[in-house]
Image (cartoon, rainbow, N blue to C red; front, side):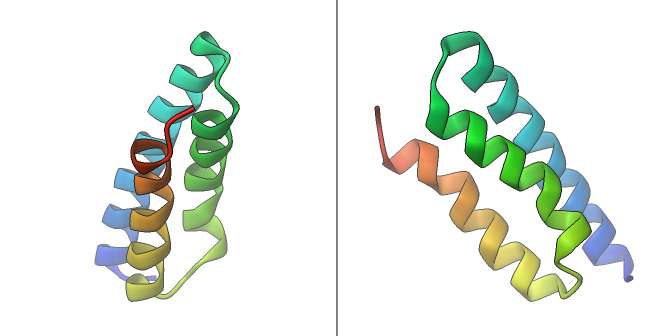
Amino acid sequence: MSTATLLWGLLFGSLGAGYALYGKTQRALLPFLCGLALMVLPSVVDHTMLLVAIGAALAAIPVVVRD
């Protein structure tokens, strides 16, 4: 695992924790699920570019799709 993968994982994990907390407090399912997926993603995906691509897509979903 490279340093870049660790740093991207930290970024997406933190963003995921924020989305999960927001989704739980607002009772919004989509941000909560995207937050959980962002927190699990760094432990599942090992390739840096794939991590960034999937993480960016998951981070954009709650912003683009409004409930």
